[in-house]
Length: 357
Image (cartoon, rainbow, N blue to C red; front, side, top):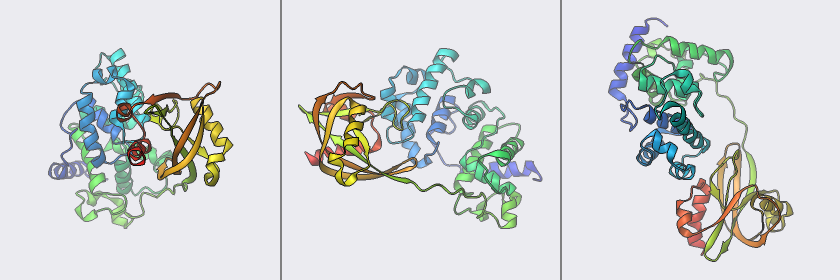
């Protein structure tokens, strides 16, 4: 690329004119930058804004986050999905308090060693909050740089990815690195979009090899995703003395630490009430003899590689068994149902209860 200085000037001028006003910008607070970057992983800016404000209001400092119960942190994260991000954020806050005096470390290796922080996140935090000359490479800048260099093939791995990291480092200015990195991400988000790149509006189109060759709609190469696998799950609405039976997903699962209605997969959606394997799975999870009854409603949703049909039905509790449960259980009051952190489908089902009763 010729004239990096001109590239930088054009990019920064565009950013000053078009940058969105986002709640985590211009704070120069590594904690705020860190929280925003974790939230923005696989989540849109529009969705994150409201969650960010509420989260920072509830946990204004690293110390306050570290001191809070994980259950409370999960409740404030509820709806953002990918809850492992939240768990690791909480764990990292505790490590920062224990090993760094409650102050986010400005050393790259120290930051990289924190739970949930990889090369991109460390570079983003340290460049934006501490003006360290570190490159970043996330979804928007991966796409932007791949088009600038006209790189075909899989840009997520191998030599193509290594080349993009080298380029991300080469283009960095000597000062105002944080602003420059944010400008790159903003350009990728607003102009160099995945499906409809606005080349006529791009301040650096002069430097784009893909635009010169007419390849901006072909680069980066789209990696075909495997089709989602269909599965049917059953969730039970079990009531006793005005309380509702819940189970807490065990660590390592897709909703680790979150509360849910007793739920398990069935291979017999047409005859799930007599599915002995389903009964056994529910027993293993809760340590209770639970039997599904009348179907109350259905919900469709997707999680990772699955398209799930969730059957929400009445449940009968036939008592405890001698089985050691995989999950923690509790009989929750109406107040607890509102306060406990739940996955999104369980939260929807708590609303369904009002209609059902």
